[in-house]
Image (cartoon, rainbow, N blue to C red; front, side, top):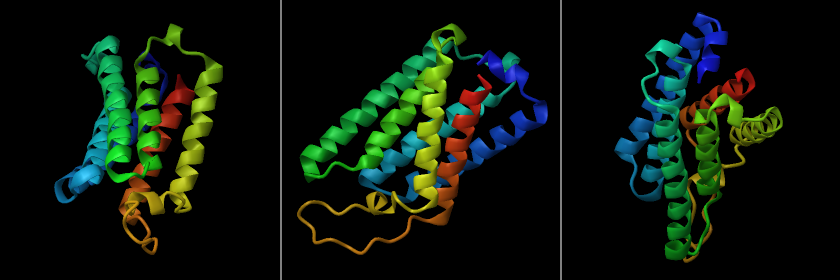
Length: 182
């Protein structure tokens, strides 16, 4: 995370504030949601907090790289286990769990030492994140945000709340920019 020293201070502040705002949006959802959506939002609070931390100036970083990587490895594993558990219980695999699992893996990658990262993989991850963000902007993930179970009749697709879309695109932007800055 020493790469943030190469960023202008004002830009780091913008990304820290934006990431904290994202965490607050998802904390509100954690408070009011239940079930798998609550768990999904908890994952986004964790990611937004991790992004805010990564954009802080290097002298403030007190979490070892290994601990950050281990925490997000556990979160990625937990996301995958949640995806499979909900799939078994509800007979439907919600792709949002796959997205969050990959995003948690991207967080692991960002906590790795600079020598363990490659430009090619970083660019591939940026493209993935941008495509995911475009999907949120265009409402392509809305049907998965309020999924019906296999036993329920199909429901009309309701758009995801605008604050949710903006928060997810903001977090994805913070992640993509961090990968490019590395």
